[in-house]
Amino acid sequence: MNSMPEWTDLRYFLELARAGTLSGASRRLAVEHTTVARRIDRLETQLGSTLFDRSREGYELTEMGHALLPHAEAMESAALTATDQLGAASVSAHGVVRLGVPEMLGTLVIAPLLVHLLKDHPDLSVDLLVQPRFANLATREADLGVMLDPPNTGRYVFTRLVTFRLNLYASPDYLARHPPIRTEADLANHEFVDYVQDRLASSELNFLDKLGFTPKRRLCCTGMMAQCEAAAAGMGLIMAPPYAIPASGSLVPVLQDSFFTERSYWLAAPSDLYRLQRVRVVWNLLREYAEQHPSLFMHTEKQ
Image (cartoon, rainbow, N blue to C red; front, side, top):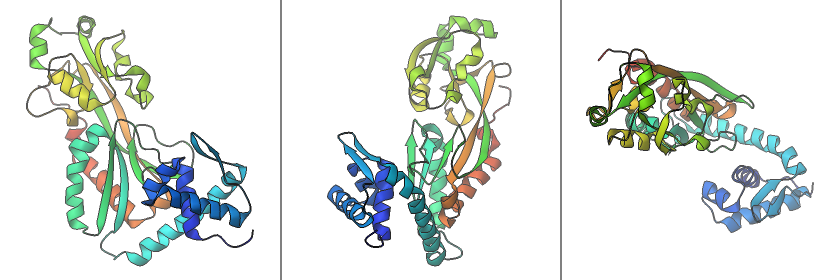
């Protein structure tokens, strides 16, 4: 080693390792991609080692890059903790938190909830990643995330956020135009709106496996928001949680007391980021809200 590398160069190394491309790292660092390339070249010169294999597809860590990665992550963790402890007031979180959430939950439940949180913490900002897949915490795409599958490798803190029930729903118009549904056997004569089966973000999204027969899928979407819109327009039956159902009555329950399935959302964060005050503020908000509003997730009233 010719000299001690600067921490800022190691930050560039971490972001390039996570993003895999200069453009991706530059967006995360808010700099030009040429700056990222220059910093990486300097770091490799200082260490006397090649850290990345370059190709048209992007940047991949070499053996030496993989060896450096945990040390750079440890330095990042120490820097984040120090910055948070020294810069934060004891009563207010500050900084940016990136929260990855499923699109329907994020849009209808979490986004309005964050508005109130940010009013109470004027120095806090949130990047809400609302998408039909789950945030990749391993690449630090998000600081914490809501997901159907908890992490099974790596250093994470995670907890079961809430268990939710999925019931069958359909529009009144669809039900009026099709044969009545009195038992589960009647479902074989009906059309369904579902997820695109070869694009599932998790095996936990196989809601319709519970049916016991192959449903007639007329329209499949990668996200539940599009599914709900299609079902409300009369396309077919859909399985959805209570928080996804509009109060307008455009979707009504079908076989609510006899046909349903349950899943759990998990809340997870890398262990080093969980120690940060700003991350814990968002973490605690989500847990408390889920506990205080069970009807959003487990609607069991007879209708």
